[in-house]
Length: 605
Image 1 (cartoon, rainbow, N blue to C red):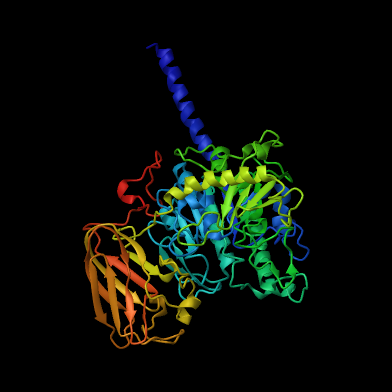
Image 2 (cartoon, rainbow, N blue to C red; image 1 turned 45 degrees about the vertical axis):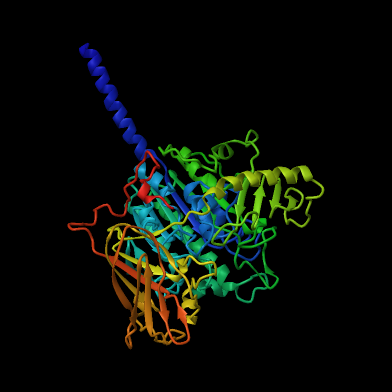
């Protein structure tokens, strides 16, 4: 080869390497702030006359508002669709409890995609897509995690006694106590993560549990709203204003660290309002319905996106139909990310952000509120286009003329009714093919030496005792079980409890609530069926058993003269493989960027 040509090729190679490095450094950061149970009308800029949200309003003026943006009517389904770009019904999350809030392990998450592109990834606050391995945020692409368990602080899997103030949360798999109010902690921890990783691209997911009930907030936030006839609930409004103040701190920090211009900052909520309307007070955002409703008030929410370096227009409003399933494919495009082949249900909406959208094709999207173990066709469903809403398969509304969905036009527009029913039929025929799949909590993995199970995830047709108040009250089910996958043959210890470990009370102790006179404990799992007496004052009954690899049910009971019922808590440990050591990068799961194919033994059944 000609020496000059050899030198030229070498220079081109070096230039390519430098350019690639520069490109990685110049990739935009991404911060998502998502609140819980805050509706479209729970903001000042959407017309609420009483609430104070000056900083969210400011962000809206600095970015683009997706003003016809939709999510699922409840929280876990919305989060699953946001994280995957795929319908919640497709990814196994169509409820908030009953073992149906765990994101199927085959799914590629937003955090996976960012992590595989060199981003630092962190999540703070509410996850609600699985509390046990392999569904925890640290198993799904997040390198640093600070979060409460389940769907809210104080629910059954959460640390016993958490009440929004001075609580104990999970930090990268371990419990840690924090001083302060929950929302302040999520933002503070998120900002620490951002500062630590500001010299590389980062993805921060700040998911507040506020303003989800119970409605607790610092008094200085609720007091200004007391005795205001326009306010539904002073504490609910106060929780939102506290979020607003924290958003101001976040925005100032991004400015102070000189990273605001190259940070995509998103504010959104996860479903319609839960407490924004009460006793004729509050503001409905001009819509019908609240949380869990198939009408627009249950699923149309605000979505603001700001990115100065990306030239996203300040003060722009997008009126075309958009949804949670659009966000991951859009980020992949905006951030120029490499991603595995994913069959997205959503679309890259960059054209709507950067053009007038006149060439954007009309499409039909579906949201549902199933909240059952096995989905039911047409249940609490909405098929949406820019103009029309088909509700529950029978009601038809023209949103241009009737935003409050008062006038059912199904009889007047039979061709539209048929077209949208056909859209739902296509949706249902597709996603329902896997409704019989179950996400199994794994025991026997060295990535999770102790597995904590709670009644929140009983796979049972009745609503389980999902909150600590239900546990205190002694709400019971006679025959319940957890869906389990035993990862390998081996010796296991399974401890059954009426109260969680941190409560430190005896099985028949009534200090925290209702007491039962249980006398025996029975363990049923796989081929094992054994019974032991409950010793006087015992806090748990522990069984040491040999289990075979495979899927099974863990179905224990406490037995008394008047009642036989499933224990609320079970703890499973196993003997680790000889020489096992926790990997240094445990928080970042090993992930195959070519997949998403997962090995057969890891697939849901």
